[in-house]
Amino acid sequence: MKSVLYEFTNRVNGNEKVQKLIRRWSTSVLMWSQDHGFGFVLTITTGKVVEVKKAVSEDEGNVKVVSSTATLLDMLSGKENIAHLYMDGVVETYGSEKDQIVLDAVARLLWS
Amino acid sequence: MVLTLERRLKFTRLVAITMGTPLASSVFLSIIIMVLLVGSLINLVLAVLISTVIVVLVSFAYGELVSIYPSAAGNRIFLKKPIGNTLALSLSVMWIIAILGAAGTEAYMAGNVLHYLVGSIPPIFWAILILTLVVFINILGVEISGNFQMIITLFVVISLILVSIYSIFFVKSVQPVAMGQINWFSIFSASAVSVYFFLGFGRVTTLGEEAIDFKKGIPRAMPLGIVLIGVTFILASIAIFERVPLDVLRTTVIPQIVLGKYILAGTQLPILIGIISIVMSFSAFNAGILGTSRLVYALGREGTFPKFLGKIQTRFLTPYVSLLFLYVIVLFITVVVFVTGNYSVIVLVAAAFDSFMYGLVGYAALWHHRKLKREEIPFYVKGAIPFFLIAITVFILFGILLLITSSVYVAIIVILGTVFLTIFYWALYKSGRLGKR
Image (cartoon, rainbow over all chains, first blue to last red):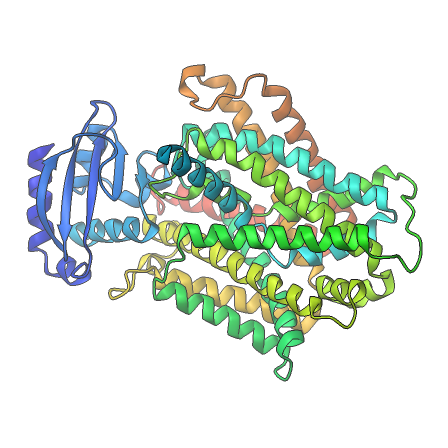
């Protein structure tokens, strides 16, 4: 999962459209694997992912995305549409509505 | 100590969110319909009591379902497995339409209240102004903090309860009000209308706030919030029934302000009630439009609605197209209500559709209760099956009763709307345009 996250980070930091969209966005996102009980926190500062670190607990991050490892990997590599997963109840997302919408928009710009 | 206080605050906030959307001024329009239906005070009290109890029972169903599917897209996920994706989707879209209808009547009420308070400008322009303001604020991404929203909700509830208690117990009646005769048909008809009091309480289940405890907090907060809404509106209904003559009630659209005039004539009370009413409208608009816009955005993103609804504003990072889309629909409904002067069709459509939806949510909970293992339901209500069965039966009967006893337009909108959407989405799935789900 860590390697997929690094790949995702490179895509986010290197995508012009994404950077234009989230240039004022600073937050931290927790990707939590429900089946394996571990996760990673992505720290985002003014649109750039500046750090990816292993989460100490499930309570970290302003935005949380919780699902099985396989689903998270599919999501991070663009194989699954976050909106579909949300509407189908396959992923649990926690955080302000604005943060959740931005996260979804980032994914759309990366793989549209 | 600090943790306990924080936990209490979170729980109070959840109760406030449960009450936030239903605490709308348009409820006073449904009180007019109810009071004209019941014929006696005892019928009125029993009608609201019955609907409160049955909605509490359905909140147990919501509680179990939200603990299984936390942070999910609400009714659609709850219904998907029990009744199938196509029907679940079309009912969810119908529910959005019912909420938008309610928003239209809310704008109608707010326009009339502002016209009373400020005058000069016609009510329809006030309605358009307040709607535009709410949508503009939402597009700018201005978020009302959870604590501020909680204070507003508690202020509204306490104010309404105090005004109603004062009216019921401390104001001398011009004419004696008897309890009257019990008429079960009137009671159930009015009870079905009063389902409108609780419209949108389930919004709390779709919020994705990190602070929200889906597995225990929401299931416990919902029944309490519903009881508080029930108590508030039982008192408000009694006050209006006792103090506002029926002839006046038939012609007014602002019964809450008329009540203020009758109980404390010559004082500022009607103005105070008007201000409370506007706060209710603003808060309900904000909750309803914002919550629905996110759902419409997600439906646009997944392709169920047109794709352009999934766009976001790059500066404020808000789903501006879905907000504008909702704005246009609510504006249209508002103008129709002002032009026709008929708000009852929309109130009754919302009440009827909500009744059917609650019945189906009860069925969904029953289905999951039977199919899943106990440990798979984090909030498991012991002995819940009879509660769910009662909720299913009563709400379906309420829905049918409303369709039979109301204007034919109510039945046309509810039945044809649902049938049309089901065929439409079935055809889309069949053609593969919505993907295999």
